[in-house]
Length: 217
Image (cartoon, rainbow, N blue to C red; front, side, top):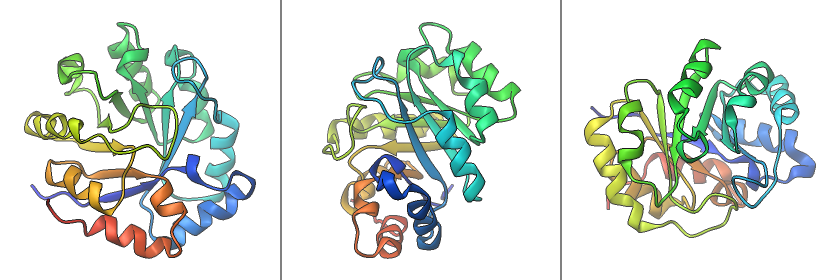
């Protein structure tokens, strides 16, 4: 089944002093949803934003919001991000410490789409038993923590194997541009979380169109 490619600008790459304007710019450029990287300085070596920023963004845009929780003990914060207006809540299997099914159930009980993410070194077997319960699998194509990293081609076989057994949305996050998106899409990814390539483009609309039209490599 051919899936429509969705582009999710990652607001970590936006001008944080003009975040509202940046979101409006992405709307006009044709974004399908917003990817919001939430980092706590524990699970990853960086600190970004919390529920209050998600709440502020929810007030100014109709784009769906995907809160990508790169945080320790995500179960403690699911309700806060749900109440802030996140439409998708994506947690890392590595951060769930054996409670992934419980965390996913918590997300679904709040009426939100549930996503599970895995780091480049984490095998698909780690989430095999969860695939029937999640709406989205987000495959990290860089080590989580900082934007501007180089796409890891070693992750491509994982995306391809995942598509063979998973019918839901497959997202990729990290180092996405027109070229690397082609590799990911050819293997079955259909949501492209992309930061620098879009926000630093002279013409964000064209950048998003390029991603949506990316060809197999």
